[in-house]
Image (cartoon, rainbow, N blue to C red; front, top):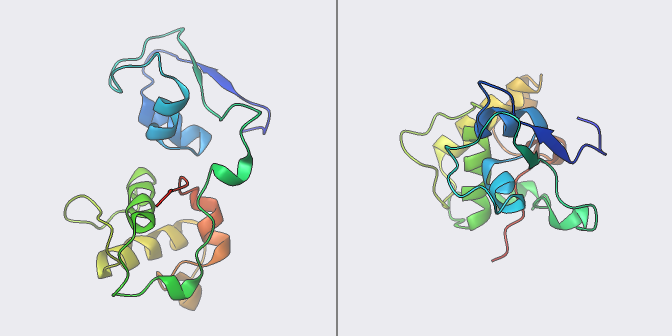
Length: 145
């Protein structure tokens, strides 16, 4: 995706999940940028939808900043972890048995390791503990606690 791409015209067979993956965003972001879409399961061919934030939106506010590797401990509960888990599900890197939640768990670590391997990392670089490079590529939506 080019940085300047702001809109996409829906084609037959598209759904919001496919479109979100294509543009490396979440379905929730697309829904927020397109208030005219009332039902995430109902989009139509030739419909024009926003697939990036408005140009005047600060880029820093779009994605969650990397909280540091020390953040990811068993005792940590934060909406950031839930947002990360939701993105891992979007990226087909989930080993969760249900929905991700806000407490760091072995399922989070295994899912994140799957994401790291998807990016081409291996060995100790695919240990499931987020690092800045893989975190920035995951595009976890900004969470305001």
